[in-house]
Image 1 (cartoon, helix red, strand yellow):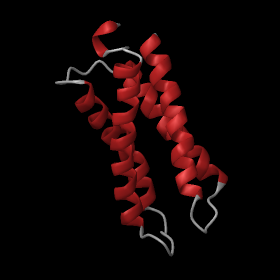
Image 2 (image 1 turned 135 degrees about the horizontal axis):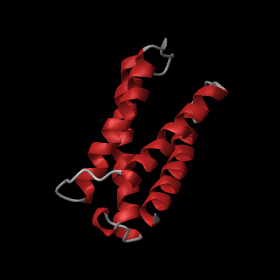
Image 3 (image 1 turned 135 degrees about the vertical axis):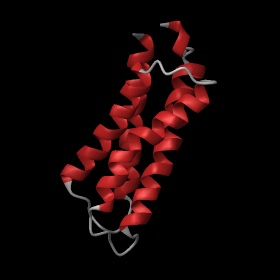
Image 4 (image 1 turned 30 degrees about the vertical axis):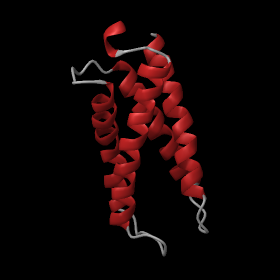
Length: 121
């Protein structure tokens, strides 16, 4: 339970970080998109918290889960029109890359900082 709570709260934290990055440009983002970003990263944390996939170590687990949970966001961004700053494909690739980074960081916080490893539960 400790792992699930820590990972989910870390995902929520990084959801707000990701939302902050998305809002940092000159264009406003729609409220539904902001909610989607926060929910997606929170779901990533939840997924890492409940996952029991046997992987070599915590870092690989976070990277793989971050990639997998970012695929829907990346595909969703491909359906959008893009904007003046970035094309839709650039946004999709950025979503995947940031998902990998957030997955790694969530797993780092959960497994290393709070010592709630996969095998503990």
